[in-house]
Length: 221
Image (cartoon, rainbow, N blue to C red):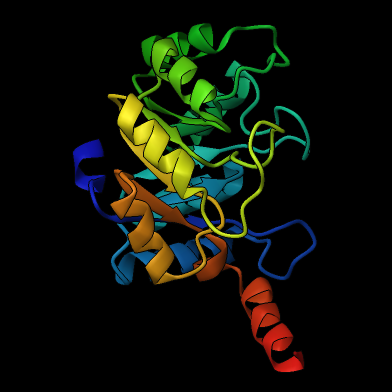
């Protein structure tokens, strides 16, 4: 399955709380549109979204469950990960940093139990090179740059953290997925050129509120 992602686009279909599109039906329609446009997989948040999207598209789904908005909040515990997989995700995205997890399990124990209890794959959302190395050592199947700029180890770049993509790709043997602040096709291409195995794009494709604000701000300058 991972081989089918090589050099291809994954679209993240997520809406923020309180927004009009914060509805599983809306996210499923956006997922269908993304697949029609050529996405090879969907990344989605929340059990209801994951369930409906799994019924709506025939491509793999990377699922996650956000709990809160600070610290370890991306699928923070083993129980959250198991629920995501039960909802229909073939790959579960979890916090892949070296920070302590709320349930007290190590990253290695979490990955091992996901593999042994479900057979699903694990994408470790990392924030630094050291995170990525630790995630690979823990048995993660994919390492993503999702948390670059959000853990205090690296600055938050205006666009994708291409330096981290390059560092991880040169160091790890597992696929590196570029994710985070990829706002244009040129930036997506640059991420591949930096060594990314696959590119995950969310806001620039699936978040009309933010896209509209980019145009509004440009006209106001």
